[in-house]
Image 1 (cartoon, rainbow, N blue to C red):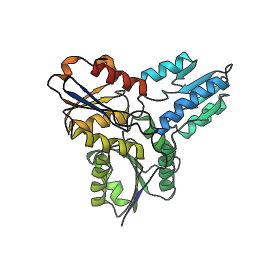
Image 2 (tube, one colour):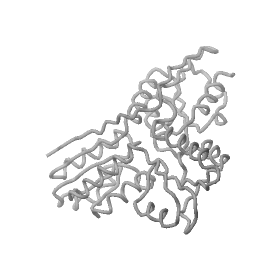
Image 3 (cartoon, rainbow, N blue to C red):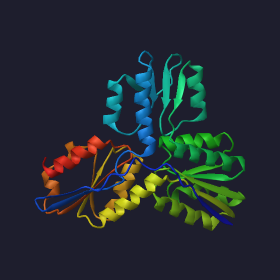
Length: 310
C-alpha cells in the first residue's frame, strides 16, 4: 500500500523581490525572486543579533555555523557571538542551536554544562524530526533521504534513533542496496526528506522502495522555499545563456541549485563577487542569477553590480 503525504509549510521565504533587469553592453541580467535568505535563515540571523543587543554582558555562542555563509559568520563574530564546535564541559551564558537542529543528547549536554539554550532550529527541520520520530515509534523502517554527513540529517537520524535502530540514510537507490533484505523483511517503511534535498533524489528512492517494500508511507518534507527556489531557477535557466548561483560551497541547497541548473544551461557557482571575472561573460547575452537560502542580500547585490560594471 502506498501512502504519499506532502508537508506544506506556511512559512515562505522572506518577502519577494521583484525580478531585476538590466541592459548593458547587449546583456540582459535577471535576478530570481526566490534568491537569498529563506524564512528559517533570516529568523536565525535576526534572533542571534537581537540576543546580543538584549544580553550585552553575557557570553553568546553558536554550536556550529549558524548558516553556511562566511560573511555572516564573520559579522556575528564581530558582534561578539562566537562559533564553537564542541559543548564546553562547564560555562555560562547562551548557546544557540543553529537552524540545522541538533541531537537530543546535545541539548542535555548544553544544559548540564550550565548554559541557557536558545533553540533556532528551523521550524521546517523540526517537522522532519517529528515525522521521523513518529515513524520510528510506530515501528516503521525509517529512510532519511539526505546526505549522511549533513548536520540536519545527523540531527534527524539522532532523534529517530531514540526509538529504533531500523534507519537508513541515502540519496540514491544504490545507497539503499545494503539494506534491501532488512527492508524486505520489515512490514512497514517510512520515508522523510532533508529539507534542502532535490525532488529527483526523493523520486529515485521512492521508485526503488516501491519495488521491495510491502507498505510505504512517504512524507515529502522538502521545504516550500527550497521547492519554489529550484522550480523558479529552472524556469529562469530555460531563458538564460548563463546562470550564476551565489552561495557557499558548503550549503546543501546552493550546491543542489547549481547541480540542477548545470543540466539546463551553462552554470557557474560562486561564493561572492571576488570569483567573477569579465571572461566569464564573453558572448553571453542573457544572464540569470539565483542564490542559496543562506546568501545575504548584500552579497547578491555585489555580484550584480560587478556584472553590470558598476
